[in-house]
Amino acid sequence: MPFDFAEIAADGLSDADALHSFGVRMVFAAGEEIYAQDENAEFVYRLLRGAVRTSRLTYDGRRQVGDFYYAGELFGLEAGEAHSYAAEALGACEVLVVKKSALRLYGEEGERFTRLIWAATVNELRRTQKHLFMLGHRTAGEKISHFLLDIAERTGGGPITLPMGRQDIADYLGTTIETVSRTLSQLQADQVLKFDGLRLFRITHRAALERQANI
Amino acid sequence: MPFDFAEIAADGLSDADALHSFGVRMVFAAGEEIYAQDENAEFVYRLLRGAVRTSRLTYDGRRQVGDFYYAGELFGLEAGEAHSYAAEALGACEVLVVKKSALRLYGEEGERFTRLIWAATVNELRRTQKHLFMLGHRTAGEKISHFLLDIAERTGGGPITLPMGRQDIADYLGTTIETVSRTLSQLQADQVLKFDGLRLFRITHRAALERQANI
DNA sequence: CGTTTCTTTGAATCCGGTCAAGGTCCGTGG
DNA sequence: CCACGGACCTTGACCGGATTCAAAGAAACG
Image (cartoon, rainbow over all chains, first blue to last red):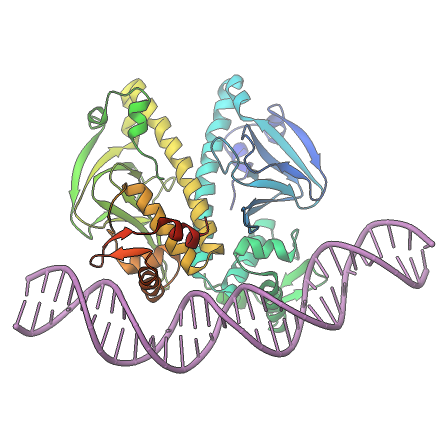
């Protein structure tokens, strides 16, 4: 799971409000770009509300979705100097933007924050490695089942709303929109999922989904 | 390209010999394990001679090769606390092993070294992202052509010796040994490569190989 | 020199991609 | 409120590249 600021509290920092002194709050509309591919990476971002996708476009038109981020998570760390992925709001969302270079000015608290950024970067590497394995060695059914379990875990229990479209899922998993659609239909036919609209579903048979995911 | 210690010299450090005061030199035989999957990550490694592969085994027997490393390169950074991949010597090789925690004791030089480790970690993340894209969106022909160009670039001009077997290449690219073998045979039939033995080859038509790789 | 391991090649199969058509959802404006 | 239009999603049929299974061939090693 991407790095969560909850650890800051655990680390002794009073609470999320204290963080706001480091950055500025911004609101983005659905589809808006938060930062561009190859843009200078001077900021880190904490997602306060909504969902974000990072993606990368190649010269030949193919797209890779790097990851999805949910409320509370930190993003924009995926690079050193420049962002190798762009970040876009999946729906209306609110983001805390923190200038990395400014952290040096904040003494001890800034330093603690800097360490957390490093920890989050290592975490990002780890997550990328897992994703890599999934793309290389898994069937479409495994990929999609795994994706659903991941999103369920990250967004908490109960019914799940997918903030992204089918094409986003396909580009995340290195497959096609048709395969995503077919697999979801099949999972529903097998009574593993129950959709209520295109974006809202419940996992009705978790064990079966885990079996499919072949964790 | 994985992080190379050449930058240390560029950064002002006298030369590679100075580094040796930080670590100890070790020799590994072909196939020997340098560190294990899930082992504590207290050391970083610089490969002095030979070639190394990192790999990860899953409970159901599938294997992902994380990367290959060549002389001069730094490895073992792919994790925070524990190694998510194991590292094995592909042939006889010589490695400089540096204890990360000890670097704090070395004052300014140690700190510079620590910064370099961070830079190398970010580099590792970047390389993993590229690899991820390759696994997700490329055909077997593109993967293998790209792999050959990468290895050619990293090991310098002239004839190239593959330090790894076909199965390693397959597990690195998320394909099968048969597909690797077939593709290499086809590339040779098309006069793009010329093999002299199983492991030694020259690129006889680089432009064609780049076209295949679809860079 | 024999054995073992690795590699190549062939043939059959199948998963997933592609192409095509139809359906659903949703916002907009009449 | 309803009709329209466009974006998004689903489904079907077909095709092809890659995997799988099988067997022969080449290289490495003691």
